[in-house]
Length: 507
Image 1 (cartoon, rainbow, N blue to C red):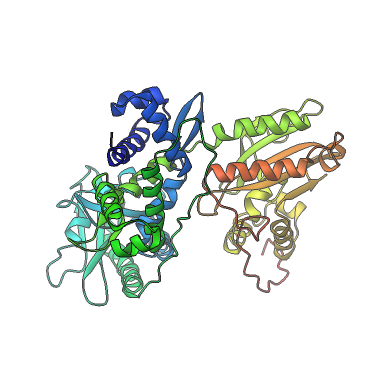
Image 2 (cartoon, rainbow, N blue to C red):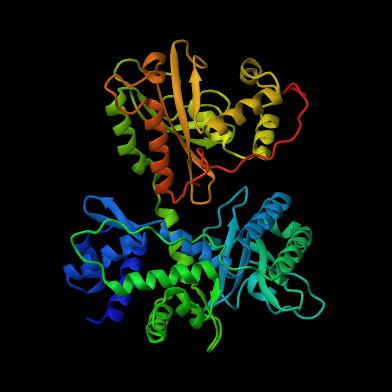
């Protein structure tokens, strides 16, 4: 088999993992019709590129490198942060699922979505392809003169209606569509007001997409070489990965520019680009034009995100910490104003009854809950304080906004939460945040037990509970795709602090 054919097979392996989930090399070999040794070699290269990883029991699964390339596919069209800001703004005003899409091969490619308050529109997520000739989004691309928005009632999905507005650059060219969708009974009565909100957001996006954009700011990075497995990795797959990383950083690049960046012969770059285009990882903008990361990778990134299982990934980490400390270990996620325990291993000496599996605590109480709140931004702190204003728990534990914010700022600076006698007398806990691919707080990890054992030094000279919790949270953040900044102990951005009066939280 030629090297180029191996690159094609690598694409098929990734597609199969997206279709079927974690698989053994034997299962992959059968699916792509190649001998098992060949699949081992392909898997070795894909692991080095962080596109797949070990999933236990000898299986492989999609990995976080796809998330970075998926971001690059979005960034080739639009500033991702600006897109999400406008989608959130629309959702806040109309309460429906908001989404942004651009013309793509075979239809409209969804680049971003913010879920509505009532239903989750699964077919409108990033990487999904919408029909090219049906639905409000498709009609918005070809609106006649005098029409600024389109609406459909069950044209694509029975019972679902949508409203869409075209996004135009300063030169008048339509470059995308921003839209909302939801149950027809909710959408149709609000169609005109929704169109007004969408028009404001479309104007902001159009202005953003009209501005010249610098290169080299996409989320992709060149992965560090992984440890070699027994099967040697095919060199061309690794070179194609380097080319993809270069293209992801540039957003849009010519073959000449990619040749310069990869230091590969022109003929090799052309062959790789042709194969990568064939498997959908690269798109050529026009005949003989520049290249960008393909929309197929956005779909694969969405598949990888959907298959992430924080509970499964956390189990061996919780067991490792429990084995080293004998204390109760927790994994928590946020639900509204509370932290819910979704995984737990009981302690061998004392066993806290406060946060049982499936139970919850307010976000300002305890180690795991405060780790979820402290590493949100200031806006979320203020929102939380307003939502729980008047709560007896809040009044007992925190008297003012400034006191609450000071505590949260101290936690952010330390990168850890230490709860000493705050929930149960004689019991201490240490918690740390777990971040997702974008640096958002996704969950928290904590250890609870008698304060001397939790806060003291390790008796055998091993790592302290603080160190175990911090490392466990880092491992789980890495699983979700987060790259911790080198200059930040917490891995989160600094708050923009401003003066707050010492308001009592019940105001």
